[in-house]
Length: 126
Image 1 (spheres, rainbow, N blue to C red):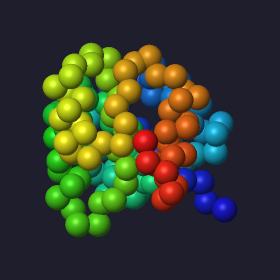
Image 2 (spheres, rainbow, N blue to C red):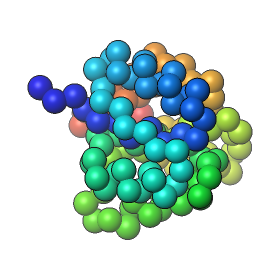
Image 3 (cartoon, helix red, strand yellow):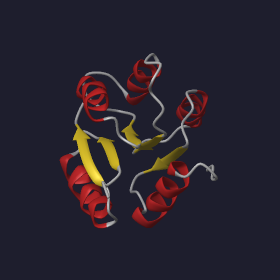
Image 4 (tube, rainbow, N blue to C red):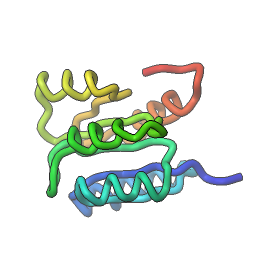
């Protein structure tokens, strides 16, 4: 059985490494991107089951990535936002774009895994 793919878009290499280890140990195939441009390219090339998206990063922000992905008629992956600097406006903007979850760093990996499971099954919503 193929491992579900997760696109992790994060510019902090330490966060990518830690989250990747945890996600891989849970049975996911992790693909990472470190900026907005690379994120769109990786989504188009790999078609992940879930996109985990940092808000603040080089070459654009997470909102821009999400907006660009939504322009593709075949984009359907649930998006989970992660951020180090949470604000009510950012959270609302993420929700308005269709985010399934909005998490503040540091990320509780057990909680993140529960959210991923919920958003990848059709009978659950976060």
